[in-house]
Amino acid sequence: MIRHLVLFKLNEGVRKDDERALAGAKAFDELGSVIPELREWECGWNTTERDIAYDYAINSLVEDRDALQAYLTHPAHQAAAGQWREFATWVIADIEV
Image (cartoon, rainbow, N blue to C red):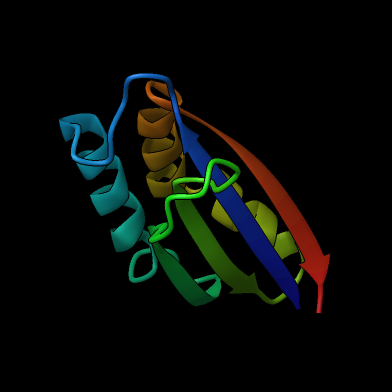
């Protein structure tokens, strides 16, 4: 199994109530029911105000590297990630569990 973690940082001047951020969060919210390779899917906004904190997170689980690749190349994922490119940057970690 592979745990796929993503942390998003909104660009300067973008707030989580920005229309683009709300649409991006909705797009990610829906992926859990759209992409069959996802065994677990959690995402949401950070609730703390610390300077080092990221703004939005995804925590997901897939079976193996093939499933991860299928998720990453899925059209719904590509569309959602494309939205986020307009207003945020991110870091990822894929760990075997």
